[in-house]
Image 1 (cartoon, rainbow, N blue to C red):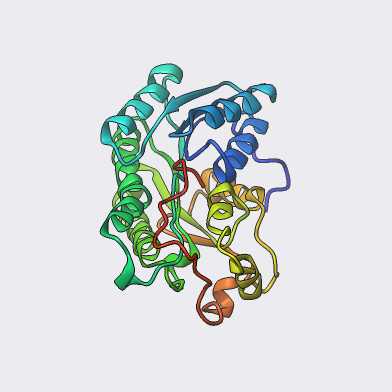
Image 2 (spheres, one colour):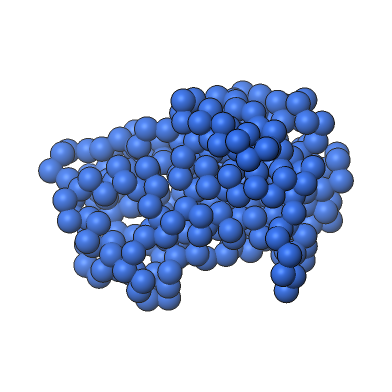
Length: 278
């Protein structure tokens, strides 16, 4: 294993869901290693703050308002990256939303569609347009944000579980189909991470304690702990890795299902968190 820092000098990295949480941590980590960044998110204020953080570290960075569930937005994001920097070397498809735990038979169709539109369709659209560019320009590396929920179902999260299973399938399919083009496609599967998205879900009384009890480390991950794996998968150190899912969950998936059922809000339903960012 190489001991020198990962170097992305001159590389262009696209990050969706880059306004907060894992996306922001990845942006800062890439900036510290010389990358040029393009950040896409629906949360413009926080997205521009991420750009400012990257620029304060000497990196070039640009924000583009992006709803990954809309193909036109994704096209504009990729075109902005290539138009501004002339290339696209790496992409981190990280935008995601979640809802409160709800039994499937009580889940409103709208909530199912909203989560799948961002968490699964959004990854599909990003892959589609990132791959189209990379096949014409010598390859690249892509990392999708999946979840341990794509491996071990979480109670009451059928919409999120379905979407994240789909992300793993897309990752495998793209990894297989584009290896010959010099494009590597992998996924990172976090467990419970302390982000604005999960904080919104944790407003349900008792849910944080439930999540702690289900984690062998009895704490959530820090966004930076996920970002490190993303950098590795985008680097030349991972040059022979594609179609794989790297689990970063503090042992949650080794232990298996959470004990019992999660606490529920007294509200009848809950929409996804504001902003397509993890």
